[in-house]
Length: 451
Image (cartoon, rainbow, N blue to C red; front, side, top):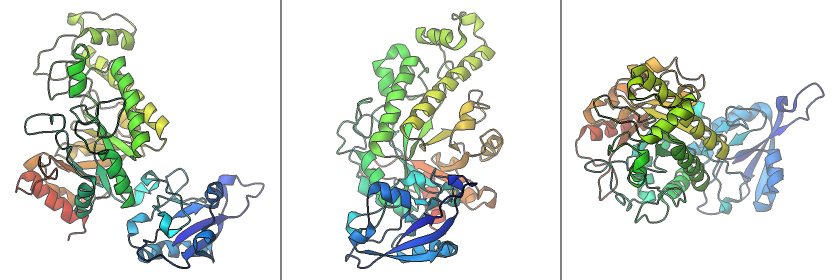
């Protein structure tokens, strides 16, 4: 079934966006091709006009109903098709119900349904708890995964695993920590041996299944960047090692919009968003020439020398570097896709670089990776009013306790997320009795309604 919202003409004293819906037009298939799935799409009449489509040309008939019955139609719609997750009513800007009704629908040509597949970014995020998982390609048996590991991954097999898990959000990779892209990129080297384009394929499959699909960038580490540009990186493998130089920001400014536009993802996670300068208190550092140049750019004055760079000055240097990096990430992402979801993952939301930052106020989603949800509570007052909060409940083995948090009513208003390193052969998380495996089982039960 498809539904169109028709509107009365705006009166002289009413702005066009304040028009009232006076009627609802329901399109039902006069004849449904055998084996075809029915799809539900709620689209504005103006959108249909621009597309030049007339559903009557494809065997659909129209039934006019009073607009007051629209809530009943919405309640009935899931029962009239195969997958109730295809339905979601949002405003034209993707936020809430309004006079022009849009849906993140998913149509197939064989059904002939009047439709506009507007993408999962148009779903109403506020009516459904985020239930997300990541099969983690970042890590191998010891450190970052070597290039080419996991490239035998099948997008279809991964989708089947995610569906059985009960997630509504898949998090996978644009560029993983080793520095290689999981799609055909011109800004980053592609994963050697990759068959097809994993990110693009799983995005298409995930959208068809009614799921949101998110990519990933590790901002503070990129093994390929560090290996090929040692002068712009600290020699610290598998660690936060990259200062946010203008050269690195230029790289992010190319690869982020490229991934968003080429693959159709709904957004992406940013991880390890810390400027690397003197980041680890237990490691020995020297100031790189590129960092001295950054000081001139960030403070408008020459680098003052090692002795002058005390703890307070280093913190201010890093905060300014992070703020500049965040501005580049946000600007390029939103320019490529205005409703692109930017998802911050952070294991220490109270870190001096992060606490009180613009990034924490402006990012769309904020996730506490640390096993202690109290750290997320501390960040509630620091985030922006529209930020969605997420707690990681799987990934650190026994340090996470998925069952306890998923079943705790205190956290019913936050999203849930987990990640796990896959088996090298199957590229799926192993069921090996480990802490991650137990947490995955608890998440699967919670995500599927306790079944």
